Length: 408
Image 1: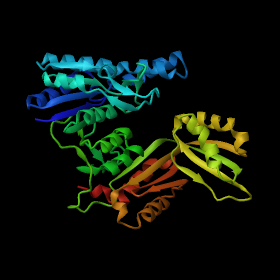
Image 2: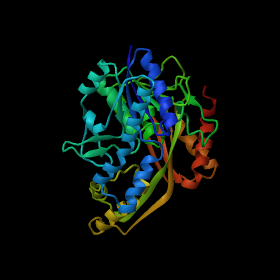
Image 3: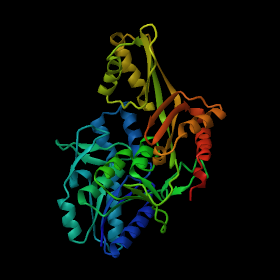
Image 4: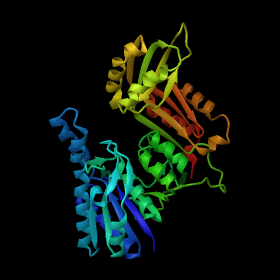
C-alpha cells in the first residue's frame, strides 16, 4: 500500500463525463489499497472565462480581487469530483487551499507556498477517505485568498506530496508523458521514458508546458518522485522524472527542444559604460515584479554601451514605462522594445561530456537563414532568441539535426 498524490489538469476534468472518468481511475487505485490525495485544476477554459469577466469590470484587475475570482474555478471541480466518487461508493472529502491551510506569501496572482498543514488530511486518510484539494490556491497569513500563477495546480500537487511524504506524485494531463518537443510542431517527436530533474527543470523554464517550473523545483528540492501520465489512457508508464542519470544507458546528447513564444526584447541604447549601470537598469524592473530572462551588454564604445534583455511579452509595455521613468537617471539615449521574437532552446545532460553541440546548433540555424539575436547558455542548455516567424522551422530542423526523431 502506498500514499499517492494525483494531480489532474483542466482538460482531464473538462466536463462532467471526464470528472466521472477521473473518479473511476481514483477508485481503482483506492481499491488496490492505496491512500489517495487528489489535486485538481479548474475545468478547461474556466480560468480564462473568469479573467475575462474581471477585465470587463476593470482593465487591469486588482490582484487581490482577481485571486478571489479565479480561485472559484477549482472550487467547482473539487465539489464535483467528491460527488462523483461518492456516487460510485468511495468516501471522499473536498477542501479549498484555505481549508487545508496551504499557507503562502502575499504575492497575489503569483504566490509561493510556505507551509502546508497535513494534520487534517492525514486524519481523513486514516478514516479511509479520498482527500480532494483545490490546486492553484492558498491563503496568506492574513487569510486572503492567493493563487500560485498559471500551472500552479502542478505545484500544489507536488507540495502536497512533499508535505505528506508521498511515495509518488502522479501528474495526469492531456499528454502521455514528456516529449522531445511539442508533437504539434514536430510530428516525429518521441516520448521519453525518463528524464532527469535538471533536464525537466530546464525544459519547463524554457517553455515546455508539460509541468510548471516551480513544481519541478519543488519536487527536486524535496525528493518527490514525479511521473507524468495521460488521463485519457488506461495503460502506459508515462515519463518518470529521475534524480540521477541512468549510467547503464548511452543517453542522447540532447534530450529535448523547448520553445517559448511569450518573449519580448527590450533595448536600452547609449547608456554610460560604467560600474552599476546594469543595476540601475534592472533594479527598477525587478522592483516592478517583472521577470528578466536573457541579458546582453555590448562592448562599450566612446564611453557608452547598449544593454538588451528579455521579459514576458505581457510585461513589455509596463517594463518600458518603468525604464522611461528612470531614463534621466540611467542617461539612456533611446529605449525600445520588440515583441516579435521567440526563444528556442536545446536541453540535455549529455552536453556535459560532448563537444560541438553549440556549433551544430548554430550551423543548423545558419543553413536555414535564421539569424540569432541573443544567446544564453548553461551547463546543460543553449537558448537562442530568433524572429518569431522562424520558430517552427527552427524547432523542426534542430530536432532532426540532433537525431531526436530516432529516440526510442
